[in-house]
Each structure stands twice: as structure tokens, then as C-alpha cells.
Picture 1 (cartoon, one colour):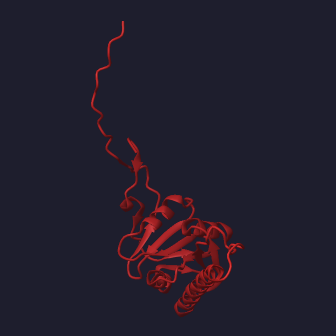
Picture 2 (cartoon, rainbow, N blue to C red; picture 1 turned 180 degrees about the vertical axis):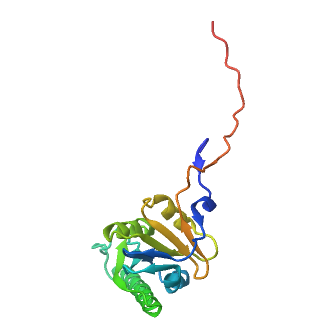
Length: 195
């Protein structure tokens, strides 16, 4: 994009000062990955969640969740097997998230499997439960592209905390600070003179 505006990830995130308190529910993104489980176990150290937590597992469903009626034999079973395997993966991720929340002593409000894109799923759940914050896991010391997308799309009232279990980053809207992408210089071509 020529002349566009981009936000650098370091403008979105900063290290929180102390432990934050939330009276309302907090959404915890749970994918079953090691990063999300570390974040769930670290949640009590990151924030006081008096309003409880809602575990949300985003599920990307295939375009058609019902198998094609025109398939017979092994092709039909393959479609059914894929749906069963996906359902088992989601159930396992939700169960491991629930277990991690119990070990951490977090008060569970609900455990959801939200269909769709993870960013939209987390924001839908936050809206439905009037959550004050969303917490997600990160692999290293920097948020992923998906976490940055969540930071850009979240409403201003919603805090976003990304954690790898030991380091925690709080997303904030930049205060007018923007990085301008350098505009490419186009060569000047003289226009023919018309009389």
C-alpha cells in the first residue's frame, strides 16, 4: 500500500505494571497448545479474575459440516472420520484447558467451542459475556500475527493480555503514535505539451 499507515507491534504492547483486577468475566483463549495452557496456569499471577473466566476454543469448521450425500463407501467414511477427529481434538483441547484452569484455581463461568476464525470467536465471546479482558498465549516473547490482529480489532474497553507463562504483555491502543510507511517515489515523466 502506497502511503499507507502501519502499526508496529511494539506500539501495541507493553509490560503491565503489577497485577490487574477484573470484576467482570475474563475470556481465556484455549487451543490446547502448550502456549495456551501456560497462559491459563499463569492467569492468577497476571490478574485477579474475581468475575470468573470463560474458556473459549475457536473451531474452524469445514465449509459444509454435513458430509456430502453423493459420496458412498470409503469416501463417505473419510468425511465422517474427519469430522469425528476434529470433534475429538476440540474436546481434548477444552478438557486440557479446563484441567489447567482447575489446577490454577480459576473460577470457571463457562467452557465454549466457538465456530469460526479465532479472532472473531474470541471477540464474539467477549461481547456475549461482557468481558473486561481477553487473555491469549504466545509462544515466545513476541505476540503472533493472530494476536496482533486481535489487538487491532478489539474494542477500546477490552484489555488484551498475551502471555507465554513467564512474560506478559498488555495491549493498548496507540495514542496517535503511528509509523508511516515510506511512500515510494515514482519517476517524474514529462507530459506532452498540448496546444
